[in-house]
Each structure stands twice: as structure tokens, then as C-alpha cells.
Length: 117
Image (cartoon, one colour):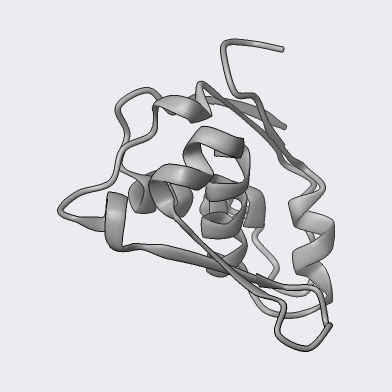
């Protein structure tokens, strides 16, 4: 099943929670935690998602290449300007189970910066 979600003016965490439930298949009667649901979720207008409070400047995203001294930090605002799809992908990934199924479920998440792609 395929779901389409417009991220315009939605709060990041609430949007990620909705997407994670649909990817996982918890909204179906035949939900089985040991199987990927096969649901595809398309999120468009990722550049229009919002956060509350001061998270826009205080929330940090970190990445590390594995080399010494190569921990990079980026604020929410800067990452949104560079690639807004990564913000939503990281939020959804954090709400999925930390096991082998997460990678399979994340492949069914399609993100578009603007309108429909």
C-alpha cells in the first residue's frame, strides 16, 4: 500500500511518528512485528516542515566519517538549507526498531524536497 503525506507546516516529530507507524504497518489489523509491512510512504514538501521552540538553532545533527577528529556538527537550520530530506529520514529512522528490518523499511520511504517528484 502507498501513502502520500504533505509535510507542509507539520511538526517534525509528529510527522516522523505518523510515517514510522505507516512504514511499520502498525495501522493494519494483520500487523506482525517480525515482518516488514511493505508499505511505501511518500513525503513531499520536506523543506516546509517545522519545529517548535528553539530547536531550529539548538538541535544538532552529528556525523562521523571514522577518521580521528572528524566529528561534524550541523544545526537544524543549516541542515534544512542543505538537505531537508535528511532531517526527516533521521527522525523516522530513530522511531523504527533498531534491528535488521529498519533498513528494509527505510527503503520504502521516499522523500521529495518540493512537490510531487
